[in-house]
Length: 162
Image 1: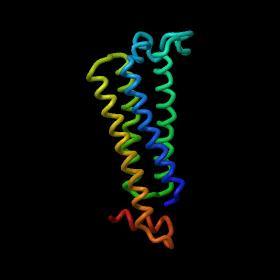
Image 2: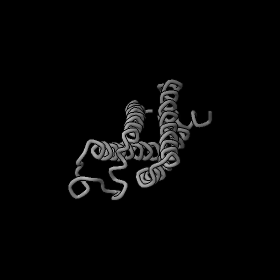
Image 3: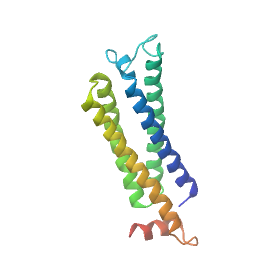
C-alpha cells in the first residue's frame, strides 16, 4: 500500500475529528438557531454572509463539513479504483453511505433543534468517524504486515484473506 494513501486517510480521519469538535461547539452556542427560519440560509446579507458570530460558526461548520465530505469521497474512490484491501474499502463505504444521512440529520438539527435531532446527527458523525478510524488503522496494519518485495495487488489479495 502506498504511504501517500495511508497519510491521506490519516489526514482525513484527523480532519473528521476536528469537524466533530467544531460541530459540538456549533451546537453548544446554538449557531444553527441563526438559520432556523430560513434554512439553508442564515441571518445576514442575503442570508449568505454571516451577521453574527453564531452565524459565522454555522457557515464555517458547513464549509469544513463540505471539505471533509469530499475528502471522504475521494478516499473511497481511490480505495475502490485502486483495488485496496476489501476491509478498507468497506469501512470507507460505510462512511460514504452515512454522508447523505449526516447531511439530512444536520438540516434536521437546524430545523428541529432538540435532543433527538442532535443525537441522530452525532450518531451519524460517530459512525462516519469509526469507518475512517478503522480504514486508517487497517491501512497501517496492512503496510506493516506485508513483504516489501510483493506487488500492491498481491498484498491486497493476501491480506484480504485474513
